[in-house]
Image (tube, rainbow, N blue to C red):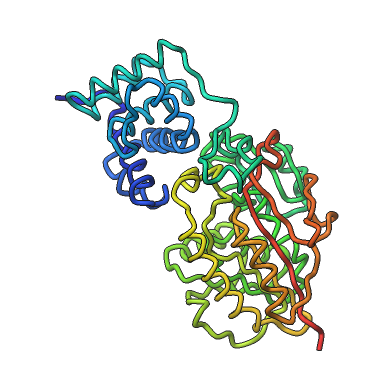
Length: 413
């Protein structure tokens, strides 16, 4: 029997949801196998949108499901998963109920199908709605208080211009807002490759928060900088555009290939190197090192809402250990008077503030406090001189990824 149009997109969304919630995969890991049989780009985008909104609003959607059942459905029950997807479409993507039913119920059969139909129909008749902002899972409420307002919508598109002096000209061409020299924010929806300036390499996509670490290193003026864990290359390109001689190191062959493609498109130069930073030995010391360390990436939950549900204490502890090992390695590679910038796109104290305190105690480096005049869009450093951003910041202007950034210098002697 032929399935209704759009069925394959819903089936792919179900596979992705299951991979995230049951197996702890990221959406990026889950998407390729789930989308293998979904050929149309529009259907692939739809599947991603459905599962993204489901994860963003999962706590609230589950509360609605539970309100319409006599007994709570098990968290891993297939009818609950299908209902989650159906409600996300109806309440967030504004899909007509009849279309939701026609494409969702074929994912089930027998009693589970009748149950899902009944629950969905009941909630539609009740004209249920979602709250003004997503309700965070209980385990995140204390740690991430005040951030939910920034999670309501997927993020807009931030561009980092290659030529900072052309900010006004490109803003006039593209529209959007600019929060800093070299930055333009555009509404989401247009494929990146179709935005003017892509082919000529005039810019690259990079969240405003992710642009800040390289800004804190200033102009290179021909000095040498090591960009550790560099792929996919946003920071490498920013440093090269600011006159640094960049060595870009990454362990991943695939991601390093993306970095090289980005350098080619933007006509920027950097020495690229595939290596494990925990065993690699440089041939010379550097004037600056940027360590954008591997992390739980919870700060990217606006665009990767799977992080709301798959990250726990074990993953945080594992990442913190890797970060410390990397810091220990690269701290000795600076020239006298050199600068280290440590950054993570994580909201977790263990990966940010705790690591900064450890750097203060473990090495002979001097904290170089971040100053308010170095920042943009009203952002302010902490009392300690670090920078912490989170999705609740600039929420009414499109939001911001969560980052922690600290900066240190070595003695001149």
